[in-house]
Amino acid sequence: MSHHEYDLLIAGAGPAGCTLALKMAGKGLRIAVIEKDHFPRHKICGDALSGKVLNVLKRLPDGLYERFIRDIDKIPSRGIRFTAPNLHSVDIPFMRDIGPETEPPGYVCRRADFDNFLFQQLKNYSGIDTFEGERVNEIFNQPDGIDVTTTRHQFTAQVIAGADGVHSAVRKYLRPGAAGKKHFCVGIRAYYKGVTGLHPENFIELIFLKELLPGYFWIFPSPRGQVNAGFGMMQSRLLRRKENLTHILDDLVTTHPLLAPRFQHAKAVSRAEAHTLPLGSFHFNRSGNRFVLLGDAAFLVDPFSGEGIGNAMASGEIASEILGKCFTDHNFSAEALAGFDQRIHRRFGQEFRTTTIMQHLARSPWLFNMVVEKARKNKEVSELLTAMFTSEDVKEKLTKPGFYARLLFK
Ligand SMILES: Cc1cc2nc3c(=O)[nH]c(=O)nc-3n(C[C@H](O)[C@H](O)[C@H](O)COP(=O)(O)OP(=O)(O)OC[C@H]3O[C@@H](n4cnc5c(N)ncnc54)[C@H](O)[C@@H]3O)c2cc1C
Image 1 (spheres, rainbow, N blue to C red):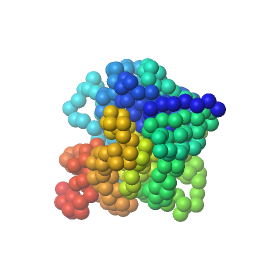
Image 2: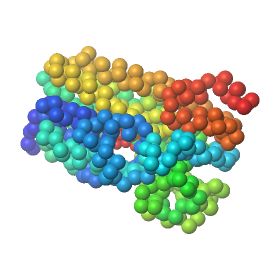
Image 3: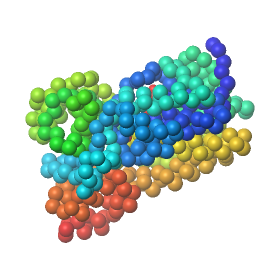
């Protein structure tokens, strides 16, 4: 087994790992990105890229955002259709008074395309070496560096970033026991053609079915005339149901009174596939001596919306700033890297506390019914409802009982 030496090892080339690598490029460091799959690789996801993703893309180097806008197949997201458990819906544009030429606040883009786009950018930088089809197996923290064994090589580096997803090997070795069982959601999705009743401007749809709360069913218009449809639910709820996700999905699209007519002539053009979402509803240390954890490996998925791509990329960006200083100071101790945890806490602490409360509130169908009912009649409430997916202040407002009391009189 050949042996390689690097300054920084990044395990996993999803959005978190690629963002970190791109932000560290050009600093004179030798960086290895090790990925178990080959790109373009398949990723189970709803494929919704929020404004958070676009904001990080804009800060990546060498016109990457402009190339994303120009080259990548995607559907602009200009609004949301919410459906409450009583099956009443409301359509809310993300921004009012805009024309079709205005930049949309988000997109739906297949992860196979988006992740491949990010990964291929790494090849533009001479300091970054990529190793595809190679799984990180073992990680040992030694006094003078990190030793890593993969399925093909041995590596030594000053520091490692675990961006290797929900079942992170880096987390398993360097922060064992971190994963809290209550903090997982499970999701399943398939691509379909021929689903009817889509919004004419391709609004994304969140359908809060009683049987899934606090999770929801989604229908996201996707490139090539397809939709990405699926649902997420708390793992604890699934375990109580003792049913498999594929059966629940089949059952919903064939028998549910709202979904069945819309899927009646639809054809699944992919397999239905499921995966786990690690929610940011608990706190643990995401760094230590010679390592940081990013994205799903660090449990950074929004506990209410299930959004994880933007948070994963933001964590890669934060890590680049902290690691940049560690390389300048030649110090990779737990104390030097603790700044990463502080920054993550500052960035996500309040947001996750708020969205965890929202996740608990969302278990009550009557509350959802009332909010959607009010939003159908009142522009101010409808804007609030959309903003709960975008604005921190509004999210906080939605966790206060007084908000719902005032809503009764709107
Ligand atoms: C059903 C479902 C729907 C979702 N929908 C959305 C959505 O619409 N919008 C949104 O923002 N988020 C969504 N998410 C969450 C989102 O997919 C994740 O939060 C996001 O992918 C996290 O990015 P990441 O880079 O941390 O991890 P990943 O994207 O999982 O990337 C990790 C990478 O590490 C590699 N890897 C794993 N183990 C190893 C190893 N041992 N060695 C080497 N490489 C390894 C993997 O192959 C992978 O490429 C959804 C998740 C699910 C399950």
